[in-house]
Each structure stands twice: as structure tokens, then as C-alpha cells.
Length: 134
Image (cartoon, rainbow, N blue to C red; front, side, top):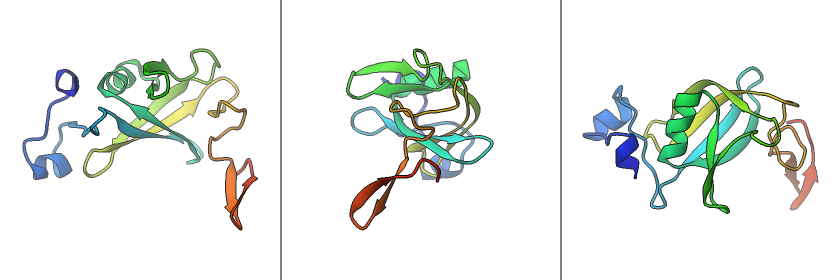
């Protein structure tokens, strides 16, 4: 499936320093995608993308993820209004993770339980403590 959307790197040098996007999807055909607020730098969420989701994200200019639990694509904010407009897409050095710099739409949140960021809990003395702001 990934072949139809993206090329494979010819060698390690091309993967790590080349100009061609050659994402490395895991055994399940997925790549981790971190959404970061483009203006504040706040980490909003971690999602997963398959090749089609990454391709659609690049084409639409809005974040599209792959739901592992529902086994389907989902356009972030399609029902909640929390669309994520893409400002910049980056890949890490070995192209097995994606960083999306986004401008959240709607109420500006990203978390389905109502917080701005999905990372709203801090581990403190072995317990989880809600702390909305990082």
C-alpha cells in the first residue's frame, strides 16, 4: 500500500539526508504523527497515519489520521470543528515519525475529552494529576 503513495529510499544516505519524502511505515503500515500548535509550540496530540492519511494531509492542507480502533481514516475536526490546518510538515531523520505544525480551528482544542491538548495529565508521585496547561 505504501508503494502506491510514496517512493522508498534508495539507501541510508537518501533516507537520512535526501530531498525525497520516503516515509518508513511500521509493520502495520503506520507512522506516528505528532501535532504541534504552530504558534505556541504546544504539543496537542499524537496520532497515527497510514500512507493514504499522510498523502491526504499533504494534498488537503488539513490533518488526516488513521484510527487504529476503528480501522479507518478520520479527518481531524470533521465532526468536532477542531480542524487542524497544516502550516508545516516535518519528518524525523530516519523518516519514521511526522511532525505536523498546525493551527487548530473551532474552539482551538485537540482532545476529544475537552482539553486543549491530549497531554493534560502530569505524572506526580505515581499518580495522574490533571493540569490543563503545560
